[in-house]
Image 1: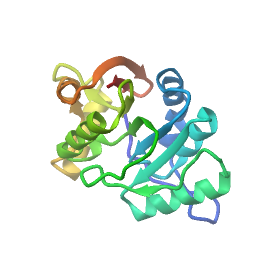
Image 2: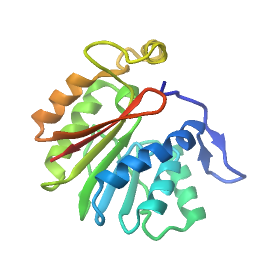
Image 3: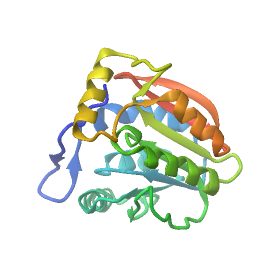
Image 4: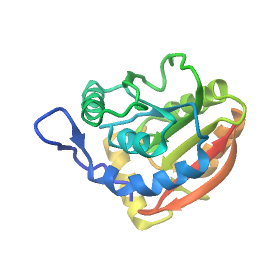
Length: 209
């Protein structure tokens, strides 16, 4: 199950910490090592508190990791993590709502999106794949992580409960059908290269342009 756990304050500064981010970062990193190119800029969509950005930048140098988020609280946390860790390849966070105008980013080779599709309206998924199809170079990679339904069915009872909880919070949210997301990717010139089953009934999917 992909939880929406509460954020914890890291020390006395603006850094926020999430138990789920600490649990899933190593399995996701293993996928990123196999999928991402060696150099260039990776745009992370909906970076949240910034723990993933710090961890991935630390282990994937010389790739430049570009975090983003629409939340001021998240952006402050990312900036605080960046200041504390002082990683040369971790760029300053940018304010980006996936459904609005994206900035032009030089040397973009990959987009990474963790735990967004199910905690957002469907138009956010449409925008993500449309922009990935437009902005990634030939051979560029889109990596998406989260829970999915397969053939209209949840992959575990915990995911079904999580889906019900999401929809009770916002009817536009919910665990997405993998087949619908795959169709969206195909419509935007992205082909599925690999589907990795990760702990807690989540998938990490790699699409290539």
